[in-house]
Length: 104
Image (cartoon, rainbow, N blue to C red; front, side, top):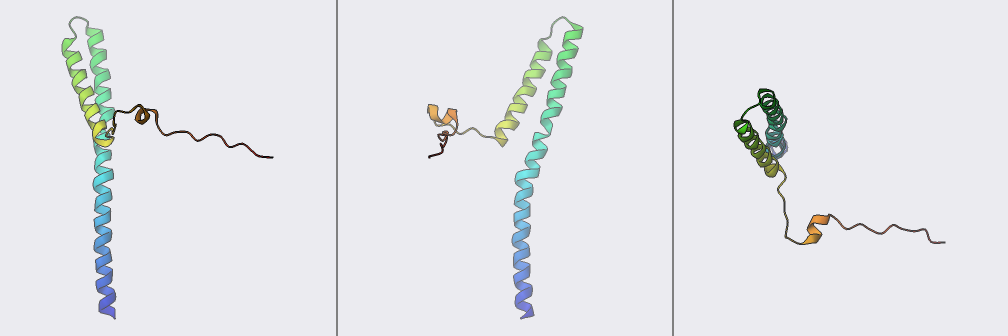
């Protein structure tokens, strides 16, 4: 009896470990990727401020900022893929239910 309980416990422990690994991979790794967004945005702000204060040709600064915007967009797309079929209904969101009225 004790052996059956032990084997069952080990099997359930393995399933729990696999479930926690899935949570880690799906949530925490994604959170680490998204935590880069504020850093990239702050770098963009610094680059734009520096370019504004220095004056002159700011094409290099614009290129840097556009590159970081692409990185931010890529991170966002990885976490929130857009699924559209092309119909207008997909872009309006869920249909609203009519308000219920009290009946006398």
